[in-house]
Amino acid sequence: MFAVVMLLILFSGFISGCWDSRELNQLGISSGASFDIDPETGDALMTYQTIIPSKVKSSTSGSSGEQTGGEISPAVMLYHTRGATWIEALGNYYTHGDRIQFYPDDKLNIFGKELAKQGLYSPIQAIVRFPETRPNSLVLIAQDKASDILAAQDGIETIQGMGIAREIKLSAEFSNYPGVTVIEFANRLMSKTTAPIAPILSIFEDTGMEGKKSKKAGISGTAVFKRDKMVGELNKQESRGLLWAINKIKKGIVLVDAPDGSGKASLSISQAKSKIQPELIDGKITITIEIEEEGNLTEYNGFQNLSDSLLKQLEERQNEKIKSDIMAAIEKSITLNADIFGFGEAVHRKYKKDWPDLEARWEEIYPSIDVVIKVKTHVNENGDITKAVIPQ
Image (cartoon, rainbow, N blue to C red; front, side, top):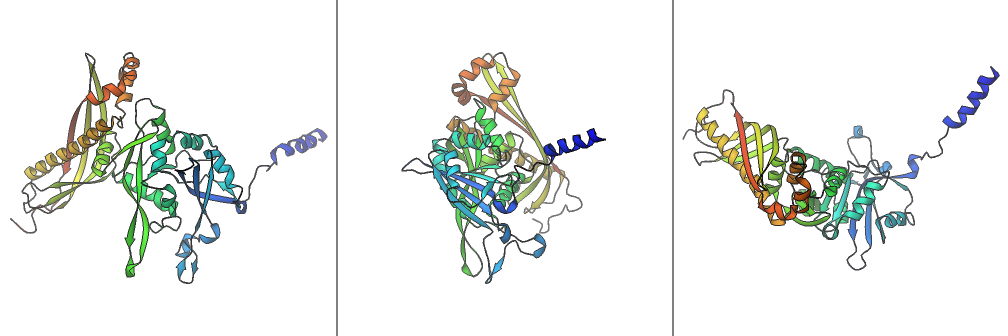
């Protein structure tokens, strides 16, 4: 019995330790971070968006901010810091910050455009190597200064970082622009051929009720990189084309002209899949992109009655629209000579023996690749609603 008691006393010293615990009231919970570069000194400029717990009420209270004098007080604070390197900038925060930054709730990593053009290798490496950051937090590029995005009051969320994160995820869910995480960006960065991508955010002025103006953040394009440097961007059509090709289409709307030229038809995507098939013949690479999609007719402004023949025509127009979007993305990527589709990785998987030689010449090879696009779509029948409300 004595031996058992002694063992319990001994082991209690190992299992009772809370030596590295941190109280919530000692932490600054980060919901987003921005990264800019000082154009004059080259210093690393960082901004943290830190949640103020006392300003965020329970969701059952009917408000996500504290009411003071009829206004919703901010639920976040912005902390600015700088340094010669990103880690030094982080350390310099503690010369004026009053709480230890806590990152597991971090939603965003926003990089200024000038920094993106100079290269994101250093800040991305700092984020990946820092033990408390989240690999599934989003990578975003600001059209101008990244810190301006964090300062914009966006959407109905009091915590702007969460609102922007939801905006990006909704955009990806409805197949408009890609949502890119830190780990996805880093994986593309480590590839010698696949070009990294990230959505671009711009600040625009919104006029609300009673003419009150506010600055909001919205997605305006997709940034394209060669290695870690931003070299160009895709517009909305090109971004949708990229998503079709890399199997990232989830749902959304394809808008086509009515066959009789009298209006538009909206076709909602219910399911879609794509695959990239490379062929290497006599040293020449051909890429075939195969798309299969199924959807529903949700809006039709034409005067024709719905028939099997009309649905077939709508399918053909949808096929052409999808091909057009993909070709727009391909043409832009060739102009930038940036393999945003991962064609090189597809060739590598299929032709491992030939890959060392092809990889060494990929920048020369990529613009001359032949691309074939095959699209097969199906528009489901529209129940009993087959007649036009206003006949032709």
